[in-house]
Image 1 (cartoon, rainbow, N blue to C red):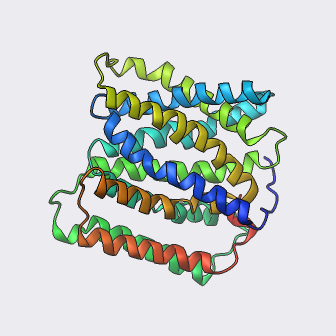
Image 2: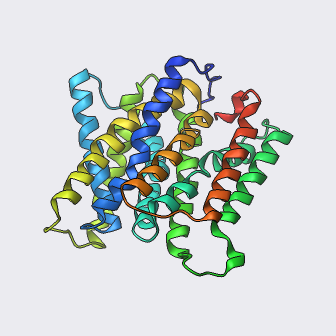
Image 3: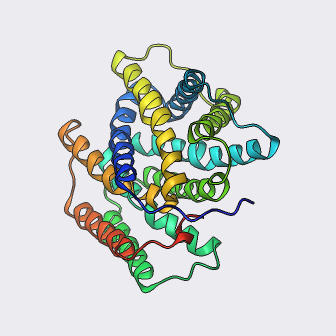
Length: 305
């Protein structure tokens, strides 16, 4: 297993990349919402992956780059694709098909906390500080407020919520896995992103035709939304994510969720007319407070496996 190097201290260029990644990612929930008006959740996950893989293949061709070479790296890319893309994409699409994009984005705000949890479990040398324990506790409390089980099930959708939690956990695991295994490879972030997305598209293409009926009468808005979701929201942004992981670490990459949360909530409220209740506001605030507590102190190298 590759031993990761210490991530560089975030610079202005890293901050710009951070924001550039966050904004289109925040719009992904909205595009998925429109795509799901015609396509099933599995079709959306499949379609965005294939479109992203095709986009990245074109980018490789234009930049005269190439896919990673060697059996070992492709085994790792397949594992990363399962965590980063296959499971997380299905989870996100399933969630958006059942609960609001506001709710999905709020639950997704737990990514940095889940990422830190994986780091603490799988990296023994990383000793938990009081800041991290406090931050994780605040995040868990925030999740409880969002679910507010004391109010009864009401409009709580167990399948939708469960789907985004599985997707969030898988995505966080993918961040940690990518940082540990791809940071020191010779391949460029574009090459890694292209290889990973190619693996994910093959996974979907081999498995999903057995479980879904292909939609042939999709609306124009659904087709355009799926195209944007695949090309921009997945293909292009994953190049930036791999770059961010390599330069600044999995922890910083997961922190993009801060901005994603607010972009997604604003789009959900303004464009889709979705509502946000008081429990979600309190829960979001608690999660963000937890993240601030964790990141107030200088990040240690082990946060990025």
